[in-house]
Length: 605
Image 1: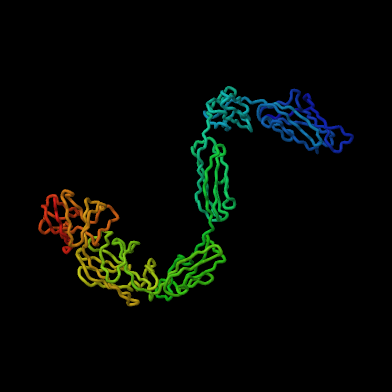
Image 2: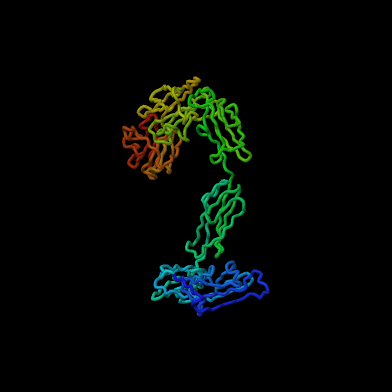
């Protein structure tokens, strides 16, 4: 950087003086501003250099106190501050100094370009038609040189134009086509292929991360364009109605202000294409929490279950913060009561809701109040592979037969029964589970079996397992006793096949016919030479949840059914009955596991 300071005593002076109106009295106003160090050929500086203007004020008494306003007619060429001129880019401009009252002085300034020996620009650039983009010009040498120090040209000015503004080089697209931008320095030249085109926005998609937010809750908004390479993606935003959400396009965040529905609209400004998304704002959800466990909880009014407490402290919260002004109430105070502070006390056997309410919201908690004296027995079957029954449990009433679950290929008879207590007046299914049975509570239910062909096993999970001996027929009864009340329930069991189903192939979907015990069926060789069968523990065929029919082959003979009069006629272990080589006639088939189950089979051509 070079600083030129020409003293008036040494160099010739070019005095440029403009005076204000003549006055008889000064009245403290500046009458003249005189630049005292302007060279005879005017002020000439290189880009990046400075020149300090020296001046005199008349009357001289105002030299130190006069307020001067400095301006440059073209700040792209040179700037001025307190009389110091700085060259910005090659060109000419006028510097003015003005005092209040109209006194003014001007100086012509020429800024000379610096010889650029090196610079870089992109090899190619896409410019949207009707838009301007900045060309990245880097690595300019020497230091202090600028974009203006380079001579720029466009090969075809009908396709694109160039402009230098604010120290940057802009190229504007005029019409679709290709041309070349060239920059020329001192012994160096660079070119950039300019492609002008315009790809309009066809659709705008606005997405909100959470379409439903609570008051005070935030969510983020995203926007995408189709096609993704659209030329102009400038957007305007609109939210309606106001007062429901607050949206900041800078952060792309929304926050709930008040309950209601709002629409966010984004419009591609150049192409007038819009996209929308909807947001629902809801009041914060109030919930009930417990100080010592889940809000929905088990209590005991009389300590008959030692692992259950008599009271529980509840609180109403919104996002974990306590809610003031809550009114507490109980749906059934014979079961449980609640005081004004949310303390729940068990009173009797049963279930009820505890409510917490404000002027605008209401929440509830489910309370089970259990007493041993309030139970009878409930018996439920379970998946043979699981101790705890799932939602597909079976409940057997007194004197009803127990049969294998047709939904599982479990052998002839091998199942479990889960025994729980059930309230006399309230359905408290599995009230003691999953909290468990403590101490001697494991023994509050016992079971005994009478009859032949079945064994019974109890375990510590209040589960009783039954298995028929050698998977053979079994019959008898099981008596359950509930010790606290002495209540008993007897369940009879009678295990055997009740029907047989025929299929044209091994897919359960091709069910042909089902025949009950002692029934008859006729099969034609011309229609099918082999059939698949399923032995059922129910009167009617029940379609399985998977693809093939159920099979129940004997573990010793590997045959499901046999015929005493013709050893070649049988149902194999895969459930296949082949009749192609069997003489026409009528035969009796019997189940290998249950010889009491027979059917009559007639074979025809």
